[in-house]
Length: 542
Image (tube, rainbow, N blue to C red):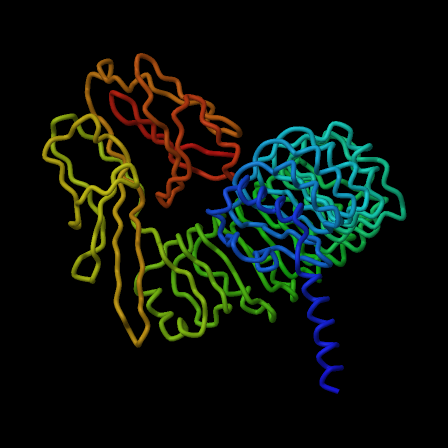
């Protein structure tokens, strides 16, 4: 009997070993992938001295690799031609890395591939090599620098496609060769210069998720109203004013209208009774009261609007609300203790006392409240070589420590309630802020917060403006959509920096043509540094 058990155990062990061992050609190809993409610096690296079945993201079956799943693992470099060695590969997920170069032609030999994700990388060139992968069910190549020249021929190659991401692939029209039997459930066409073909949506009856971000839309395509199964719709970063096509989307649960310059919540949104998540970030909303009747809402995002006054307590009557984010508004006043489990209110105008009132609930809820802003923007005009004093309203006696910041970020090693200049120099003319920091353990809760003073602009008050070397320094256009041009005569540009109104640096450029396309609509501070001094501008990005 023992011999029989041993025989079966031996057979099982041999079978298991055969399944997990890897043929030499594929092992070599994995090692080439490792070296080609800087494997020693991956987030989850491989020990090449160990068996491949122990390597992160690798699935082996019957001696062959069937899955390579290395998304968001800090791969950096090119996809090697040896990728063709994986003849039984079904899943290749290399998304959200730093892969560069062109797609290798050898990719076309992965005839069993069902899932391919190369999105969110730095890949460039023609995407046509993917066309031969006819068994694909999910394809994500968006958010690269790839191009699709023949969209109908490209999409027509895939008969079983359920998910398609071709964002930022230079597509000018939507494919017209879908049919009523299309199985497509998820589609992302964001960031393409699409001007026609939207009627194809009437054929995509199974579509459940659709991303139309950054398409320069002014109205929602009417064909979308035919998508009765749609549960997710991303319309962010457009300029939509006509929302009538939302009316029939009764099953919509997730909606993003971020950065659409909305001054009010569209009436059509209030009819979406199944809505669970709504993103209204980066608009011009003054109230969220229109959301009060959406009883299934669980998450509300309304960052970077123009909400003022008290916290919108009417939203606390939503029975399923779990999270609300109201970052970077102008809210102030008492905060209710019945806040959702996750509440984000950073970069508003709440005081220390108002935030300390939350101490009883900080152990039970996740509340982000630091930093906050205080005081108002001021301009201090002074002549060169004179004295000047920058002030703020908080006191060290209340437990604050202070740090003054030049150009909104440079630590001046000044830690007093005010900052004094004995002799103003030309390079001192810029924006300043002060960080007031408070920390204390109270009621077994470690309470820590920073307050940032609204910017102080120190400007030259020289009487003879003809002698001011920065007089000719100007910018245009303002407001700006894509680029800001710096007009500079007889001056050398050192750098131009853009900050949000809380003082956080968002970007830096050494070019006279500053690309602001990636910035959402908002008011920013542009600081231009030259060899003759610094000049600041308040700019509106739309």
